[in-house]
Image 1 (tube, helix red, strand yellow):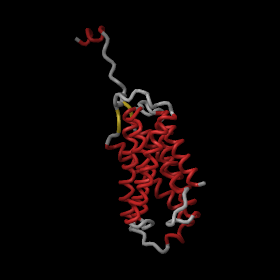
Image 2 (cartoon, rainbow, N blue to C red; image 1 turned 120 degrees about the horizontal axis):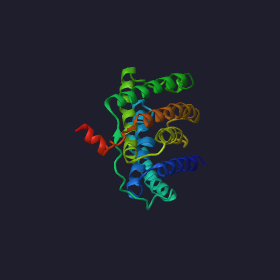
Image 3 (cartoon, rainbow, N blue to C red; image 1 turned 45 degrees about the horizontal axis):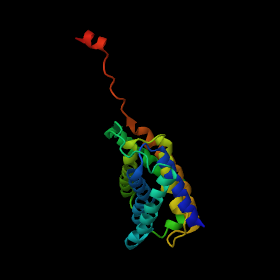
Image 4 (cartoon, rainbow, N blue to C red; image 1 turned 90 degrees about the horizontal axis):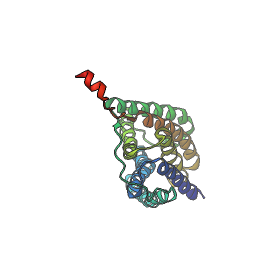
Length: 234
């Protein structure tokens, strides 16, 4: 049952993204696959390996099913959204991230990550008591990488145009990158620990999505001067 819910949630969120996108067709399929796999599997596996929840040899075994799942769900979402035959030649959006806004992204992720982790830790402390927790500075360094990976996974969609980007990314990061991966049973994390982690990650990732979507700025196209203005300037 949880597997079915996992698939349904991922499909629904990818459908929302497809409907919000300004492009379509095969191009959109590839962007949805990148977003889904990276946000919903790859980025989480990095932390799972870092904290010793998954041994390195299990990473590939855990990633392969996600590759297959998102390879199926991505075209399905495009098809169900009616975007399969939509134009796939949308011009890149004039805008993006600056070094300052990327710094804001990293700082926001660190603050949200540590705040949510601190609040949930009393409920999961026993689970991690037998594991070696890396030093805080290494944990913080990994989160810098993970925050930028989250941004990179969404960047192609942002550059081709994504309506309501803050809310859409909040939904993606909190569901595909937060709740959904923790629904299916696995031999590495018991249900109660997954429950608390789901609350932690869905909340912090939702807020992070709002930040990323808000910090991505479109530049307004330059308005050509009127004839009278040109003459006056001359």
